[in-house]
Image 1 (cartoon, rainbow, N blue to C red):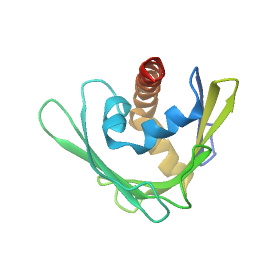
Image 2: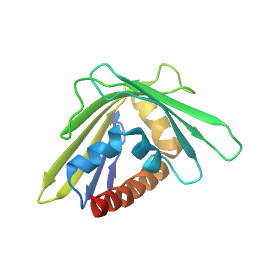
Image 3: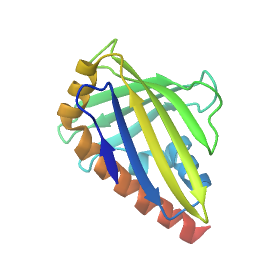
Image 4: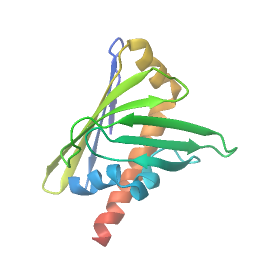
Length: 157
């Protein structure tokens, strides 16, 4: 997996290859029961409050720590999500007004899918807060859990 966060750039790029067809990755991103199985670092429980993957649809989830404190994230889908790409905004309730845009693409060749997530911020300072706030730990954990999930889904399909 690659995480690219160039100094001075308001963008983070994540690239990860999965030994699974893109349709399984798309399902993992758009089905509430699957999202809660992979998104977020270990030790946090994820509750999917809303997930409406369509143009203009809203998504919202809450991560709960061991003490029961909730961390709410939400956004909107832009364009119709497809197994090729998802475009969505992203906002953390503890940083209201700091909105960023995610473009997630799924490129498949011979049953192997490369997921590329481009996250663009309005300001470098917002991107730096995201990176410094533990983003890498959460991304690495989530991507490994996603790999485990799609391997399991492929084995049972």
